[in-house]
Length: 374
Image (spheres, rainbow, N blue to C red):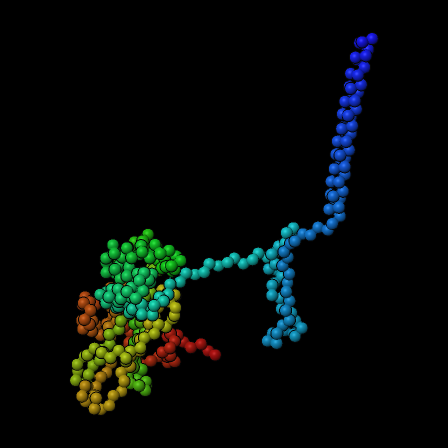
């Protein structure tokens, strides 16, 4: 009897715990179903709302033609050609490729200070004329007004290179090179080439840069006085690179007085020079310089006091970086009269062609070519 009484409560407690567990599992399952149903409802609601997709599309803009337009008044002007549209995403139709961008050519950096720019110009003129001392003084003054100017420093390098002081020239070229392309501009690749290839001597151009046969024409009909017109060809060998500002052609004119004396011209205002073709392109291997020499008419008193003058001849010298490469004299004895320290050995020099009158239809402003028929 005691055993039956003690075992009955235990069975009832076990059934109660099992029932509670089943209820909890049912509640959890119901909760998960509710959450899943809510998620499906939210996703279904979002799928019903419209989707917005942004995409940039280039369209042709049409503008009515102005009155200056040559076409009909109702004609429209397209600001963007049809073939220039960039391809859209997913568009497989062929399109004309856009033109490639060309690099901007380098230029020599301008000298902002006007006084420094003036001194630089005078220094370059002095270097071409062979006066290196004056060129150095002008460049030092330019650097005082504008320190660190790339153009002035590069000119210093050219002057020292022409003087044969290559160590100092290398230092100046290196200074320009270290400024970089942004600051030095077109001088940067020039300095780099000088540093990599070394320096050339003006004597290296002997036989590669020379004077051609000079033509001399007298114009007796000029109203201002006696006139002589020279056409001076400067010839360059193929594949020879020269610096244009290093080339100088000098003409020394001589006159004969009525007393028989031969005197050199002192008044350069009687001379005008002009290169026939600009810019230089060395077409045919030469460039031509036109030099016009006019002896103005003077009154009888001046002629009686100083003597009557008439054109006698000239000496033409071709220099590169101040070194003489070629000389032509007419008559030949004039070569010994110029004070340039030239060797008086001109027996093999060509004699300039001379004519007492101008050819028919000659125009001093154009080359010696026949006129084209209209």
